[in-house]
Amino acid sequence: MAEKAALLESFLNCHVCSETFTDPVSLGCNHRFCSSCLQKFWEQVKNKNCPICKRRSSKEDPTVDFALKELADSFAGRQKAGSLEKGDMKVKGVCRKHQEDPKLFCEDEDRAVCPVCEFSLHQGHRVVPIEKAVSDLKEQMKSDLKSLQDKRDKYKKVENTYNEVIQHSKKQLSSTERQIRAEFNKLHQFLKEEEESRLAALREEEEQKGKTISREMKMIQEQISSLSDSISAVEEELQKHSVPFLVPKHCSHTAEVEKLRGFPDPDSSSPSPGIPYLISN
Image: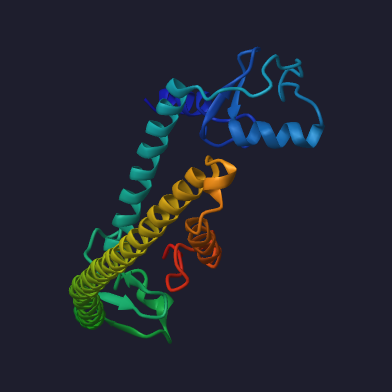
């Protein structure tokens, strides 16, 4: 059984570090190494040759052999468990020679002492009964436990404080959002009312301007009608012969023409001097 274990251990050992494989990789020559060990070896020798047969590796970056890794990890785990078990036996302090439970504990070396064969080796050391050592250790552990519990409680208080801050922030955010929405709703309402007011004022202005222009248009049309009548009368006189044309009636037409000449020319830039013909923006 021991030979099989030794053979297995030899199979699972890296030829570079002589330890159980860690992330084993396999080269083309079938020699296997820890991935990190192989990379370090290649960096040292400045080539990609196998550390055992010196054959040039065909793999620039060898991949991990997962089957071999699982076997090596399992073997390493069993070795570790065996070491821990031996350590536990040592902690228990059972003397292999006398097969007795420990009665004393050396505080200087922090281990149990066999009262038969080891007591003389601890002369001058602080040696106490095992029960006292256990009691002192438990008291120390209780004190450490209390300290850890107090620290945990402090962290919980801080956690509760942060939770309260988070809840307060959420409430404050909601309140601020409602306030902003209310203020902008008021602003929107004010702008809407201001818009309607200005539009109404514009319509009123245009209505008054239209009435004024209508009155001016009526007066202009009357002037056009009067001028047209006078023009027709003058044209009619111009059609008469020389003698009838000289009758006193002609003098009245001449005076009418002079009167019409005195009419002021209309302003083409504005329908009336009293109305600035501008379009409000």
